[in-house]
Structure formats: C-alpha cells, structure tokens
Length: 231
Image (cartoon, rainbow, N blue to C red):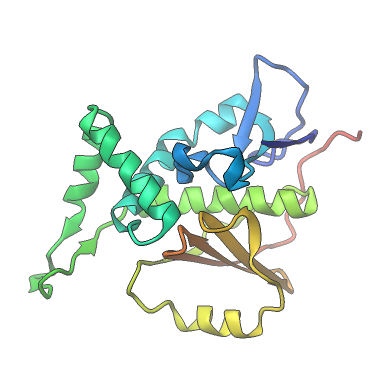
C-alpha cells in the first residue's frame, strides 16, 4: 500500500491536523473495486491512499457501495471483473447486502415508456445522483494525486456509463484519438484512466475491470480555493 503524506483533505479542501481520531486513509480509486483475492504481492497491485477527514470519507461510504454493486452484474469477462463478481456471489450467499442488491435488481427494466426492449436487454434506471457523486470523488482524488491541488467541481458534471458490448459516446472516440497521454493508474486491469484539461475544460475517462467505460466532462470556473496549510 502506498500512503501519500498530505496536509489537505482532497474531499473538502480544508486543512488536516494529524488527528488520528478525526482522520483516516481513503483509497483512490475505491478499494471496493479490487477483489481481495487479487491483493497479493505477486499481483503487484498497489493501493494508493490519501489522508482525509474521517467524516468526509464516511459520507461517501454508502454511495461507493452502491456504485460498485451496480457495476458488478456487468463485470464478468476479465480477470479483475471475474474476481469481483465471484466475491459478490460469495457475499450474497453469506447474507451480505441483500437489501441493496435487490434494490439494484429492481432498477433494471425490460419495458421503458411503454416500449418493450429486445430480449436480453435491460434499461438500468440508475440513481444518478449517487453514481455521479462517486465519479466526482474519484476525479477529485486522481486530480489531487497528480497536482496536490483541491479541485472545485461544478454541479453539472456530464457523466456517462458505457457497459460491455455498447459503443462509447463519439466524444470518447475523439478523445482517445487525440489524447497524448498513455493509460494511467497503478491498478491496470482493475482501474485505468486518462484525462485532459484545456482552458478549464476537463475530460476524464475511466476503464473499470477492462470492461466498463465511464466518461466525465465539465468546466471548472475561477472559484477561490479553501485555505491550506503550508508544510
């Protein structure tokens, strides 16, 4: 595990005071995306953590669980995806997360607006507020890891989810064509990303379990940053 020393909470932008009771470590990206069976030295997967306020971290815990569980049904087909799917099956058989999983299953609809979808197709009626909130959290964490700066996000982030077998949005194809950066992240096969910034416009693309694509586009204004503490 790689723990980076910081003096600012990337979730709220306020100073950290090195208070063990009020602070803890947060994984970037969320630890729940990585099955425990793959967290072995031979896999050379390092979990990166940032020090944050405990209250800030805990405020995302239920949304992160929803985010991960809503993606798991589409995870089979890769090493990382198969491992997390198997872990979810074992947890369910052990009586864990029944309420959440049944709630997510009810969000899959075969009929939308009176139109019956083709056989084998489902419309996923996401809780977009919760899903997008976790995407924004991941972006904040990755941005902080890259720049050591707190990122103030607008309310109107354009987040899109592309499930396996579906074509990603056209802007993603253009981004991949012209983006100069290589795939980034210490969790290749579990979580990889690319990003670009131009004139305050941010474009982020995540690849989860080598199967699921999430893109986010937004513009950052000139809002003042919270006060920080110098080393």
